[in-house]
Length: 183
Image 1 (cartoon, rainbow, N blue to C red):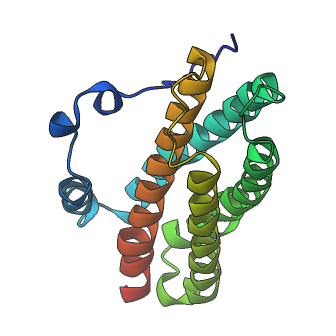
Image 2: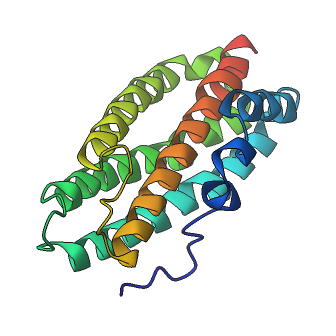
């Protein structure tokens, strides 16, 4: 059974009954309220460890687990290549944010950062499309009834990754980038 070192595979809300899971809309509103007036540098300082580093770990763990399951009867053959493609795109995207865009924002570039922000937002749309493909490949992150525990954990991790990425994009597009362009 593959191990996922240092990765919280299943967060509490994923293992709780449906009626106890947080409402995504409520969570997004809380996210907006939490960061709406925070200094932009605080937001970028939060994004890198909370989302960028988490995504790097999640993607590596998903590839490792997917490779271990590859060839298992019923396991989608296109899972690993899709996650590898997502990883390649997302690593490049996050590097551009960390090395170029976030320093611009932290140094008060304001609307002078409009071009790189537009590029990042366009790439966010691509990432959302890839997550849609991942959901399709995994039957909306639902392992078959006869799936092994490793397979179930992998799909739980893939769902967590998709949720984290959606939250990450929401924070950047609707808070960080919107406030930067308005300054």
